[in-house]
Structures are given as C-alpha cells and as structure tokens.
Length: 462
Length: 110
Image (cartoon, rainbow over all chains, first blue to last red):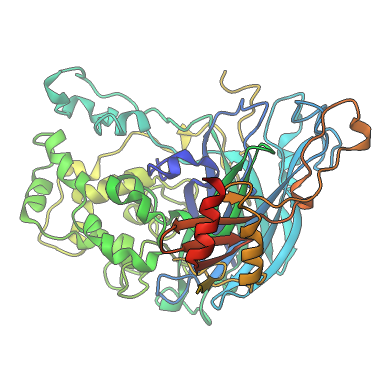
C-alpha cells in the first residue's frame, strides 16, 4: 500500500495513519494547487454502527517546503470536533440525512482549518466547517454525491477545503506484492521457492477496491505556496515539497472512572507521508516507526535505503534470469543516484528535457511539484516515465500508477538518467502489478476533491 | 531544591513552533501534582462537576462533555530517587527535578 498500516506502531492507530498524499496543479483551476492527504485506511463501507471518522485528538497537517530545507514554510492544519445530538440512541442517524444540518444525523464532525507560517504563527482560516456523513446506504444517505458536495467549502481567496469520506483511489495488488512480490502478470516467472504453483500469468487484483478512506483536501492559489514569484518551469522557485503529518499529544491516560481517554502535553508527530510507498517498502522495519516521527530535513540518515533498496536486490533473485542487468548493477554496489534524485532531491534540470523539480542538495523525502508545469491534456498514468511531465514524480495525481512507476524505477528503468552506459532489462519497462485506474470502481471526479464518491455500506460488500 | 525546564507546544521535529500556550507555572504544577497523591501516583484528572441532564432523570448520569471539563494535569515521575518528573497540562510540558515532591507522591500510593 502507499502508506496504509506501513509501520508497526501506526498500524495500531488508524485515525492517525496517513495512506496517500497527492499534490498537483488543479486541471480545472490551473492557477491553483490541490493538496490531498488521506487517513483512516482500508475502511469497509459497512462500518456501522460507529462509522469511520477523523480523530478529534489528532492534529492533521499538510506541509509545504518552498525553499529546499526540508522543513515547512506553509502548513495547513486541520483539527476536528465530534458532536453528538442524541446520546440516547445507538444510531448514527435516526432517519434519512438529506442535508448537512439534518436533525436525523446524530454523530457529526466539524473542523477548523488554520494556516501556520514559517515562524509558527497560526492564522485560523475557518472554523465550524462541516464534514459529510459516511456513505451509509440508500435509506440513510439517499443523495450522497450532492450531500458530500455541500461539504466543499469555499473559504474565499481562491481556497477550497473538503474533509470527509471518499472512495479509495489508490490501486494496488497487495495480495500479490506481499506474497513475496509474486506479481500476478509475471507469476509464472517467479521462482515460487520451488513449489511450481503458477504456470501462467494472471491479471492483477485491486485489494483496495470497494474500500474508503477519510480525505483532507485543500485547493489554494499557487502563489500562496511558492516562495516569491514563479516564472516558468526552469525556475527553482516554482518547485514545492509536500508531505503530511499526524500528531498526537505526548500523554494519553485512560480515565476509567469516566470511560474515556485524556490527552495532555505538546503534540508530537506519529505519522508522515511524502513520496508513496517509501516507508512501506524502502525503509526497513527497524526504522519505520522512527521515520514516522521525523521531518524530511532529517532524512539523510535514511538515504542508504534509497541508494541500495532491498527490493532491487530481491527482484533478480525472485525472478531468475529476468533481471540480469539489474542483478549486475546491484552486485556492483553502485548507489542508485537515480532513485535518490527522484525521491530525495528532485530531478535537476538537464536530465529530462523540459523538466526539473529539484529543491537543492538536501536529501529530504517530499512529494516535489513543479507548479509551473501545466496539467496534461492527455495524461499518462505513468507520469514522467510515460512522457507526461505533469504526473508523478512531479507531484502526484489521484490516478497516477505509482506502484508501476516505482517498481520500474527500482528495477532499473531510470538508472540511465544518471548513467548512460547502463541498459535496463527489458522487463524493467514491463514490470507491473497489473492494475490501472479502471481497477477502481468509483470513478475519479473531474473537479475538487477529485477522489470518487465513497462506496456505500448497503452496497459494499455485495 | 527543584529545577524546572518548560517546553512549549510544538518544538518537536517537523512541527512549526506554535502559538504561545497557557502558562504552566511551577506553583500550578505542584498544586495539581499534590492533588494526585491521594488518587494515584502517576496521573489523575481534575475535572469539573458532572451534571446529569434534567430530562434524563430515569437513567444513570453520563460524564459531562469535554467542554465542561477542566484540563487534567498529568505527572510522570521518571525517577523517584532523583526526583525527575514530567508534568503535562494542556499542550504544555515541564520537566521538574524535586526529590522531595517525588518522594511524597511515591509515598502516596505505597
């Protein structure tokens, strides 16, 4: 998964567990950037009676670095508050929810959005904003798209926000990847540990289909994010680094007398996500929890994981004879400067014609977006390696196939960017888990918040 | 003798420095901590009155809402012998060193 349950500690804390981060120039509002952070992973839509929600005790933030120091220059902070209308019923709703102020809706969430500047100054942008309910079913939420649409709030100044349930838009074949990287389209080539289970390829299975997440999305004018004025793709000031964090107060006490938790003390980061799949498959188990507590500025200590990723060494072993050039590259011990550039510094000018998203020499895991690159008319889900400079790793759009992109990069497809003498294996340009946006049943939206209408509990599972 | 090191809301890694938080004076810490002694060593909550809704006379009273509670003061004695303790209230944290207070608190549950 991109970052669902990716580290031992955060896997126990779904409300604070970030799953995906997206950052892209809004295709329908190209003077703005849309930032999305998803939380509360793998929601079965039929989640009643206590449907999924954000944590009132979690501080959710989306950070933007616009000067390459791996620390936030602009932060959007979201703090939630749950209100119960009627404590004398077990029901989430006592009738159809036809509006966000419906008296039938019993357990509601509201939130405050604040902007934090470099000096730590906090400006409240809006308070008391409504979240939509979860998508329950045809009797409880009969007009869900319109209901959720009413929860898109215009804050003025070109800023829009949304916080609430959405369909999971990230597609991945978890079952195959974590069954010893047995990618179904190539399963007959896997060494199968000598068991000879698979003799033919099979299509991928989207493990996250028909599941929901909780989305925090904000669309802001690009000029609110970049440092100074941007003036074209080549200008380093056009590039921003984006990541999300969740923080909890340092102390939690179970107040048994009142049957509730008490939280106290300063907030401390417990979850982090910038580039997809990093803490999932790049960082080793022994460092995952610590990685989640640190800012991108401290990532140099993890650079060896990017320079010599474990998966690059595994692919030639698991698929004998399929990746001979990758095997030789791994054996040579050469650092994967291509991956370090893509994931830790951004790609400098002169590597990919007409493109750069470099933020300087500091190694910091951030989703880097060159905000001066206009949205593609005909996007490629393979982003930059598919010839589409507006896609991952130039930011990330909701439909980008980040699993395939990163698999191919790790398999050596991008190494020629820094070493022209290297010839990638043919398989490096073909490897995939076999999925694409058609593997997501809920269509993406063409406008904010871009992720699809969440699956209803009545209809899913079917 | 006691020493005190106070920290604000968000000096942690990746966290922007935040607004000034409500002051956590040593006096209030000790007052809060002293109140813990009878209730338990590590922590306690100082809460407001619990009011049962008038319309709910037929059922047991529920705890008051969060809004009506006073903030808890939570003390973590890191080492009784040295008297090093962390005190938490709201979004603040103070590190105190007070062997006498730590010993009195420890005696409170022994």
